[in-house]
Length: 116
Length: 112
Image 1: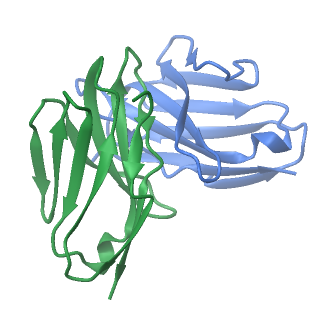
Image 2 (image 1 turned 90 degrees about the horizontal axis):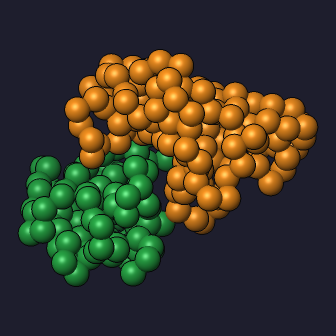
């Protein structure tokens, strides 16, 4: 139980293009989904928190117009990196918080984004 | 302590030996402490979520303790096996935030 999938697992795109990453909770409904990223030799850093049907809350320093988050249902959240640049190359990973389990977060396997 | 800190950064342990590592976290506005086990190309696997001071949790050969007053947690692995090789992440939930604050992890390698 508590499986989270993420697609794609890796993507290479050209500078200036947009990339969409999907995060799905497969066997549970999630009130909240989170997006994190990890740069080399750094810890996972929270980018934004999204609740189904409402606007995402972004952490300080994360551009909301660059990282568009859509949380269309209780099992799906998407992160779109718009007009990607090489400095956006990173490892992006999502997590989902199940209904009625406020302290738990289950993670997807992550997406490696490389912008050339 | 403002950040979550883990030590050591990496650890080589002989198969069959027991080991432990540390997580330090902000003790103010604390809600919960998470431990995850993360193997390359897989999802981080949730090991423990602890909320109460003095909490001790166990899962097979792995156990964890929590001290919320001084802001630290220990993870113990008894009788290490090669399949225990992974990065162990500690994350704190608190300070009014919904998301987790992670340490950089302890990279554990079990040598046969």
